[in-house]
Amino acid sequence: MNNSGLTIAIDAMGCDLGPSVVVDGVMQASEIYPEVNLLLIGGEDIIRYELARYKENPRITIRNTTEVITPDEVPTTAIKQKKDSSLVVGLRIVKAQEANGFVSAGSTGALLAGATIIIGREKGVERPALGTAIPTKTGYTLLLDCGANMDCKPSYLLQFGQIGAEYMEKALGVTNPKVGLINVGSEDEKGNATTKEAFLLLKESSLNFVGNIEGREIPDGVVDVAVCDGFTGNVLLKFMEGFAKSMLGIIKEELMSSTMSKLGALMSKGAFGKVKKRFDYREVGGAPFLGLKSLVIKAHGSSDAFAMKNAIIKCIEFEAAKRKA
Image 1: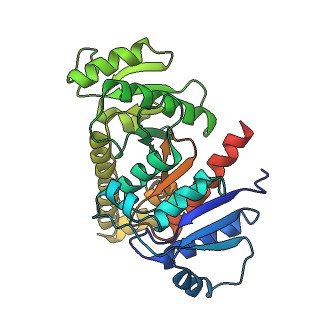
Image 2: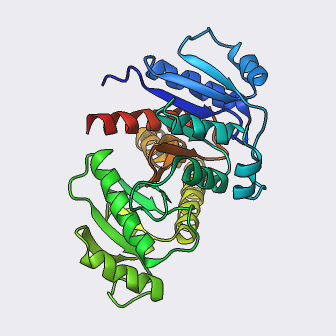
């Protein structure tokens, strides 16, 4: 795939673990896609200090900024007041078409507010949604919204289904993706006022809507796109991450409990390694804000270099897929 001319901007200051892991992730991504331009945004002195650990790469450049938006700040206020922050400058660079996409591990609220104000929504989209691919028995299901919109109107949920289906088709090549509405039961009449109305809107749409789905059905991969409000989605996502980590830990503990189980663990090492990889959020790297005019990827705040690398790669590959489409 030809990615020449592609430029990805990266927020060097947003990660909880500091600029060093962002720089490490950038360098790892540049090894996989050496033809892509990577623009690091943040304190120039700090970034140069971290880059000094590596051989100079002309495709990796810096845009200096003097401010940082922290997770405890009010998003809209921070966007307005900290115009020279790495997050705001990164979004403005994408808006000005100096970069094709932006990756940040910074404040989700600030990134959503900034992206909506600065980059803007696609025509007809009421609210952008944060979508993430969660592992299932059959592959992956796109969950959205998973944290951007805590309170939703029924029309938002309809649009989440539409933009989610479009993403699965264009970015992941899923033909006629199945869309489901997360609810407390599979029956048509289940749910609160919002989900009941959203159900009717989705049913009447041109989407391949399969109806309500319960949370326990998601791991079976019954749908390609699972729609819900951001509060429900975030709780579900964080629970799945925590459950997977705890379960893998329990399995490891039991396998190490006796000589026989250790022998079984040795024989099953390859299979368990594959399972662990599928449930590691770092493999996904980041989640796209869908419904914006340009590509913005939200990486986990606690991302390490491996996760940042994968978030950058996701941004590159999604943009490349858009070009191809």
